[in-house]
Amino acid sequence: MTKIHCLLTILLGFATALQADSPNIILILTDDQGWSQRSGLMDPENPKTGSSYLHTPAMDRIADEGMRFTGGYSPAPLCTPTRRSILCGTSAARSGSEFESKWVPADHLTLPRALKQANPEYQCAHFGKWGEKMISSPEECGYDVSDGHTGNVTGGMADKMQPAHIVEDPKRTGSVTNRSIEFIREQTKAGKPFYAQVSYYAVHLRTELLQASLEKYENKGAPDRAYSQGWAGMLEELDRGIGRILDELDALGISDETYVIFTTDNGGRGTVPGGNPKSPAPNVPLSGAKHSLLEGGIRVPLLVRGPSIEAGSVCRVPVAGYDFLPTFFELAGGEGDLSDELDGGSFISLFTDPETDTVKRPIEGLIFSRPRQGMAAIRDGEWKLLAKVNAERKIQSAQLFNVVEDIAEERNQTATQPDMAKQMRKRLQSFLDNIVDPSPTLKRRKKGA
Image (cartoon, rainbow, N blue to C red; front, side, top):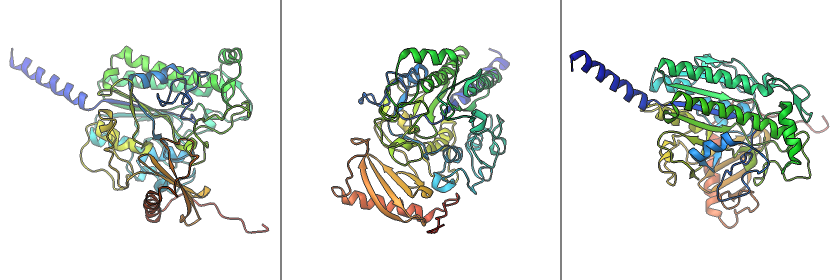
């Protein structure tokens, strides 16, 4: 072998090793999709955690080929605070619990910046819904390619309370998928590791779908829950877009070196236009819905497929969307400390050992806060403390639930587990006392006003 051939072999080996240490990462983020709102079971031990009426084979494929996190959470019970939290690795209590926030993402560490810190070769793209009043653009936050400042209106909001709208590109699912696939092809051809966040507009109000999809579900009969036939069709079309991305990874031969993470920005809505209010609630078996810190508002589907993850595996360790930044940083080969503003921790160890809780965060447990609604919560292990707070974010009262055995939050255990309740209340209050929520609080109206 000549010296040139030896050198080329060494360089090729180095490039292969670098690529193995820097896998591709795709985060698929849907909008307003509840924890149990797909055809596959979110918890294989609970037959109520899926819907036989819905049809989501692509989402189910990610679960079947990867890992289900039964305790996956959105950082907040509504869209923009969650998107801001995912972007910056922060709890909504830190970066803003409402649409409006003084937090300027571009002034802080962001997910694409963290990836580029781990490996400058990463190419990062954001397609679809960015958020409401995010202040900073995707490019200002480190993305190389994006759809810009997009929000609810971009995905359609006119006449949103109608049961269904027939349009050519429903919820822009097709066009968002097309741009995502084009980006994936370009980076694969260039030999660059990539991160793509695909933030679909579905299944947020308004309900949009193709005529054929609507007819399919009209022929299928009444839904099993209080969503509409149009909503079910919109969800299937969303799933079809996800399936196209998975098929493209296979066609390009990069599925084995790509992590696919599927989740949503908050829990499902409590009501859906055209749904039968007498049917079981859209989020059963969870209580509550979007906007609330009950499980139905913040527990969301979280499915992860990728290298080293065993097919069909299940993890019951609670993790949240603000854990993504440190997790992806470690997946990309990053080492060392990141920003001291991070509230999340890497859960990469759970991919190979899903039964051991080794997620290390600055504070023990997951924190949720929405002072404008007078709510805060902490989840640690099987326990969740749900608190009522005043305008100064001081806890006024609290309930303790074992949300593994009691996911409907029907049995308050503060009396039977007083030490656990006291300890979690102290931890939650300490966090709230030391973090200033940059979102404006709701001004109380004076009596008689």
